[in-house]
View (tube, rainbow, N blue to C red):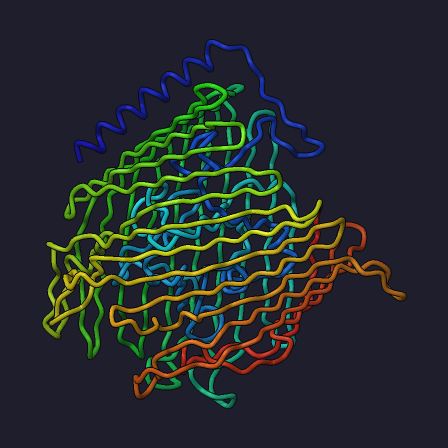
Length: 624
């Protein structure tokens, strides 16, 4: 706790300095109210990075425009076309969904809002449930494939996903529905003042189509989701701004238990995130303070037996980056967070946990343009955890440009600290937490190239090889670090071919993955190959004139899974999914028709859990 008090004191000192700077300068930050553009360009920086170390960061950006083009509703819609990602959902929308990045475990991907981790600490293994999150109020998604411990901290062994909620200055609303009265809705509204802005977003989804585990005659497992996002910015002077984000989400889902189609099972998942920060940005340097608080409050009603889960985290983060000269940049920072949580699981299986932990991280990075076409990036971080003590992560990257080819190599490592349940939990089968657990650790090697084949045609190829050691396993009624010196191994190659010209956009992607258990057999739910196409164009029709056309095709390859009844390992067949969207702009409105699962593919992923059939939605997005 003394560490936190020390950081808060530094925060108050800095705030006083900025306030005094404001008082001593006659400055009025004005907005272009006509176009609703802020007077300061707001760029989301990657944590622990600086001007000349950015080239060493593997980042995939999914913009609001791309989200609208494909008509995505939840993360499964959005992330299924990203190389290195496999996502399985236990039934229709709203059911529990697990993401496997680069063949690692579902608890090896760190999820963030505006760069702040939000993984639920009351889950058994600290994984994020992508099934309860919908994207109506989201502005942009950033995907960081590969171990990202030096940037984001623990849990980012496989990679990280950052959800951006700010930066949408276009007033708009959207509504779509189908023949079953299911709907998706959101509204975005801005209030622009001379030196500040307030952004208000509301989203809602209702979906009730199929039973998670039954057949077409059984009850349907539905979901209702509501989300609210408030963003406030206040410019104090030319270089300083106060920023504030509040995010509230409630998802109520009906589900079936692990045996068969059931009624009377319902989950109520509530989440809130609060962030307030102070940023100072000059041409040669930038620093940023952020205080954050996240809370999860979940209940699962299984025919009158109620399981409760709650977790909280608050923290304070500081970052500084500076351009030293035309060739060198430097950055450093610190992040303190305090986690506490509990859960009570009742019924035939009783489990509970209650505990807390804290973590203080310090980190730095260094970027050096050795030559005009050669760049070296170095990153380092130390995390001091309450139980596992100090652990270090490192990353080094070399980039070189040769004509129209960018070539690079990287080495990086990562770690995952044990969860509250793994350290403090108990159950009625004799399990008791293990406070002597060590963190899981990983090593990753990468080689990549970006090639400009033509003016509007680019090809990117990336290969990697990684391993995880000290993996935490459940052995003899206890979580323990595996000490047989046999690692979990992953390797793969992915590629993207992108062509953009005027209204035409074409992206071909593929991913080839090998993810092995300690005995050399394949990991479950990790296909060896995935590939697909995203195509967008404006087509001229005889009756309706110009229409925007978008098609998304995904091939999800054969893979191994666990049989839902016998629990034996079985091979699952591949699936080929096609989504279509047609839209027509009339005045300020954009009218659209969206068809998901055009081929009406009938499949389960994972085994025993039904996925949605063909569906047609009609909707309107209006900007004003």
